[in-house]
Length: 598
Image (cartoon, rainbow, N blue to C red; front, side, top):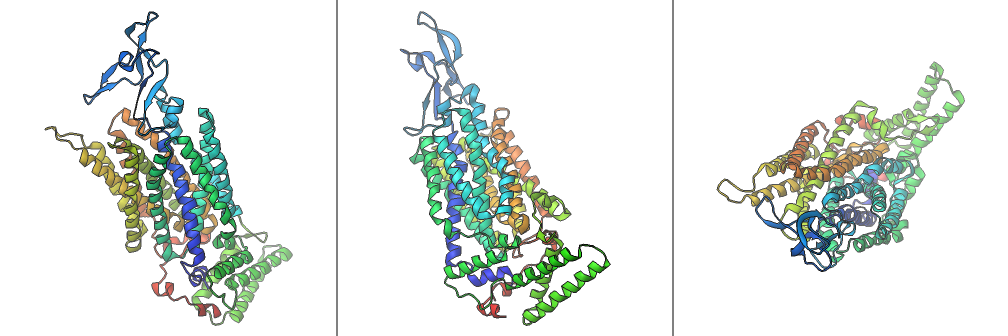
């Protein structure tokens, strides 16, 4: 039987699958989500601040007042009056000679800005700090994405978790700005090992008709992560205490190390059939399901046996000429004979499937060993090259728009903790709608429509004046379109996380996820600087974000549909992805234990 049919036999939502789903949702989504978005609180501007007056003076004596563009009286945050040697306050201005006094939302609140006075002429340093965590994820995306395809998903996940704990605790005790930047880059690098690898484990564990549901639930959990982060930040207003809590809580994963298993798809892609069989037997026992009379992967065992025989022929004959070609022909004939003897009652389509796997493995065999693939294989064939480039643009667009809108949320009036909670809350219905549309109309159309609407909403938000000519406020309209933009880009993000692994062959899937994650982090790194352009023109940031989103939506039209299609396993499968047909619904529902007796 096909591997997806083995997973159906074991139960799509068996005890083991449910455990792994909950475990990975917590440790590759909720907690890493906190680590990722906490930078918004760590680098948030204080409620207000002004220069610390000289000893013996009050702020209203030494701090000048200003009238801003809205006609509102405000205190000058970056200058103070000079006090001469005789103690007289002059009318001359100088910079804040004694530091700053900060007003915060809640008692005991501290941020990187208050710790290191990253205000006024140092305000750009706060933007750099906000972008460097994503910079670390960007730096780690390709190597962290490649390593799991070589050594496995499970070891990379747990090593990344331990490093996150060590680096996170180091951040708590670092009182040098540049030391914090270095540690933040490291935290970003290994956060990718948690999120991307854990996500890959989940997606490879489920059959095609369940992947959209699993990915959508994962996105809903991300929305819950965002809403709960607001509560965590409120409980721990001191950013160092918050960082310590978020780091140490990751240690709760270690007792479950033995209960997590390596990805069966990855083991098979590496030719480690025995280990893959052991994992499947373990899952059957965990789920209290009786193992079939024959091994789950008996067809692959036979394929591996024949492949080894081919390798022996290569070793003894060593020459590629007409005689060698005849040996190959004879060997494959032996395989057909062996197949007919052992699988007489198998369906014709199953035989054809395994013959195709035979051909793919034979082609990829070099010196009797399976070839190790890298992300460069995504650029060596025309179809995968086109798909990879479009995904790269899509990921960049989703990331820069999502993080840009999140950072721009400070323009919403009110309590920042409540605002962040509401912004997280609006994502949850978006993810639910994404699942419904992916199941009804497919991945491609869902991606195209949501990116274009998000882009239009951003441009309308940017171009709408705050008041009409008659003085009527248009702020509610601006906020409405901003929320539509956030809803749609969250919707698009949900589709993206399902769509991307479905387009990548198993042999390079984690490397491919690392590549697109690289594009995601480029967007995350640049988002703070795009928002910074508001100082040049208030309409610029969201207009730029809107154009990027619309372009990505138009390019998505060129992608293939993957709804209910089997995951591509080899590079050859990836090249034929436009011809892959959907699995008939009756076949999805017809896998019963007796199928394994055939």
